[in-house]
Image (cartoon, rainbow over all chains, first blue to last red; front, side):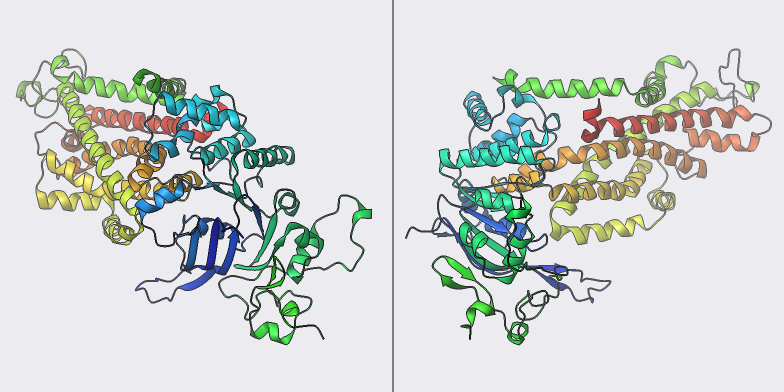
Length: 330
Length: 289
């Protein structure tokens, strides 16, 4: 088996919320945004990461790129432990991993021309601004489907889809191996979404990219991913190949999520009993004891309230964190 | 090569200028403020009488004739005094604005960007801001002694914390923008992020603030002189003139009215200018033009 391109081990991120007060007397509360997450992404694959809003998937994406510092755990990129690398060493690693953001309006500096935006990573990594850089930027814009005359324009002159292309060009200019797509198509119209997803897939083929595709839209994830990880309240509850997640999900939460995807035709609706998840996602400030899903789980058992289930492999390549699959039925 | 890089930049500046010149409020503000600024700059050439020359034969002359703005209780030419007063107002306003631009940006950017400095810098800031502006200015000038330079220092001490707060709040918002995150992901250092991504985008509210600050500085300087803690009489400042004219408000209303009108025109001009700048410099409003 080849070595994973990106690997996280026991990754955690806690935010201190509140606290301080007049004399610093009010104790701060810990928000566990990402709690003990381990996952790996193989070179060339697309790992979809899904979950409700607020489940920590964006935080996880940023942790993996060390845009925010983890509270605990390890991150390995291409076999190298990058968790504690200093700024200088980290800069070299950053060439290999980039990010595409959700908000096409906030992701581009409004005071920079498209050329400057796309060229910036090159300049940071020591390329002098000049004709060679211009040519490289022009080629990259062409690759993401933007004309050369876009170079001297400002971001506000473009539509959402075009801005997303600019963001993709900026992420790709360093020829990275891994791209974290943080809800990269969520803010776009459906037709534009399809164009951007196709573009991402074409680029993956051409450049041999590896994607971590973070989204809440399950049908887009199904389209683009090879494997899918499901997150709930800061934890990964199930990881499996796309076919397994969509065809035979094991975790009750995954089942609920899949059942909630509207079918394109009533006759296509699955006939079995639909799994419904009631209620809202609990707060990550004071997460439920044991299995975090027990407050909403239709199959809750006493053990679920006491002990958190470990993420275990139930079938080759299929990991689930649930007491139902952990304890042999019977 | 250099030329090729310069073109978009220059074109961008020209476009902003064109939009500013099409903005009615900005143009009227610029006009009003421009009159005062030009008069102030030309003070030595458009006045023929020393603003402090006493002439007891000519006291309390009404405006008109040889004395454009009339004379005050000592027979001094009010025209000379108001024009030289304008110059002093401009110098003080510009100095306070310059000091604020430098130190306000420095303190605000440091506090907003480096979280560790934030608490320390902002507590000092809060302490200074807890005093009413004019009271603090009076306290500072009382300690330092009344002089033009001390007025500039006092007003800077009063307003720099306010400017720093505005810069800090924009920096805090901008620091979380995704394009800043993208720059971090690309490996940019603190200096690059501040210089290319944060400060240029924090400039708009800063410039707007500074144009209003100019107005506050002019107004506060007049207040300080009026209260007798500003530039020492007989230095011709608008505040001093008004203070001296206060006693003769009924007999010679022009002494207090004319510098008052000059002050009003300046402050109004600057406020209109600030409004115009605010409208035009906000890049999110650009699309509509």
